[in-house]
Length: 109
Image (cartoon, rainbow, N blue to C red; front, side, top):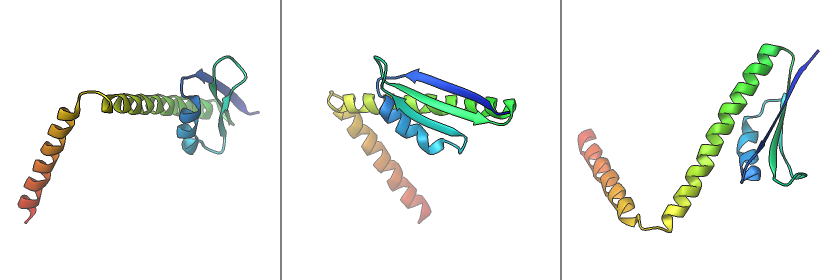
């Protein structure tokens, strides 16, 4: 007898998140987007032979979803910041990286 779980979560960018999650799916998993409701939702179905295996896969999926949400949010913030006034901060970060790279080159020669 197989154990099954269906995880349904609503997100602003469901399609992007689903595409981000799919490469981590195992043969026992299927992830897609359900557009039948008012909001798009990611739906992931998991089927495993044991309760412990199902628990482990659901836990891994939840972690992957959390990381994917953080990456999408970071991308959104970065995109929004590029239209803001942080060009001086980016220039300072670039100069710091260049100085660090230059120091590293001298250390290895």
